[in-house]
Length: 304
Image (cartoon, rainbow, N blue to C red; front, top):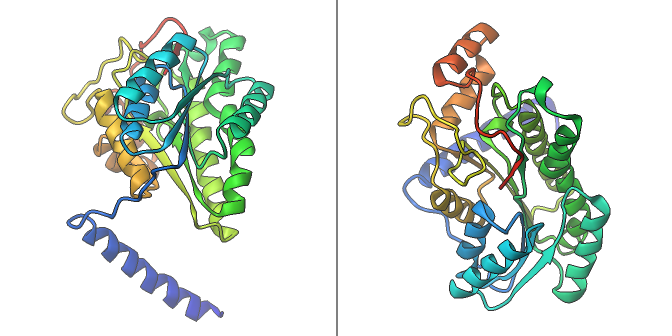
């Protein structure tokens, strides 16, 4: 196809996609049925992971929970069963350890079956300025927040590719879109998580595997304990998010095949501004929003 025809095609499709998006502002997208699907959630022992398990439970899938906290997973499994889950399996797994991820993944495939919805939720934050963070904590942040995504994809994506069916969910962060003072290692890991998920999503489309969907979630700070001590300069514009609200938004995004979820909605505008403004203006905006103020959210390693 020559340049002229391809340009016309892109122009017409762009118009249609925008019209489609406008229509869905008033007509909700049809939600898909995930009954019988195998949903694996990492970091399911507490926080958003636990709440997502409870939300998924009522929809009829088989739940697989991973965490390093055995007691936390037991409690999540109990709550999920109370919420309607018929089958819940849980496994101790340190997602920062590639060999352990592969070992436990093989166990899941033998005992439960192929995972069709993978939710990479496990995450940690040191809460230390870059030069104050020990090398070991920086490495652990990268291993849990991004390298684990590589290994879980390698473990579970082959079955999705064979069936051209599945869903990959990356719980990233608004700190994966905009740098935040005092969270250098965390931001680096979340920027990587966003880029990785976007790239794999494009690979899937280019290879014709359009039955495998991707969802990238970028919330502002969530009140789960992971960011205890964090404050927001403008609560109405950028509120500290309630965990149950975020969990419901994530599940809805999975059911409607939504690719990006930025929370609160003001993040769509802020992220867009960051990409078009020149550096001094962007820095000024960051200071106005409180992003340039040292984030004092933790003095110890925290997990979500």
